Amino acid sequence: MLRYLIYFSQVGITVVVPPVLCCFGAVWLRNRFGWGNWAVIAGILLGIAVAACSLRDFLRFTERKAREREKEEKLP
Image 1: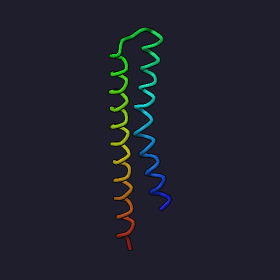
Image 2: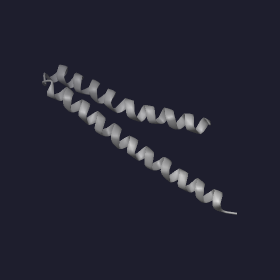
Image 3: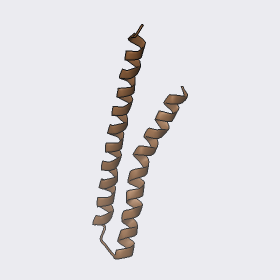
Image 4: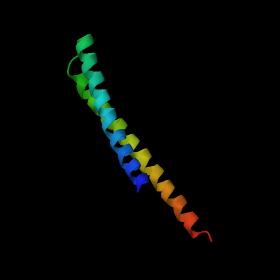
């Protein structure tokens, strides 16, 4: 049960943190260097793309672990 709680929190962190950090970074770049709002939009899109890639990798990892557990259970 604890393993699933850890997986759930890891998914939450890997999906939420990249868009937030990219958005804050884009707002900082806009304020610091006077870039337009396009920088914020680009930051949000980049953050969403990174979150999607991280989620995909995590799902692949959990699928691989599930297959390994199935193989271990089938062995006598």
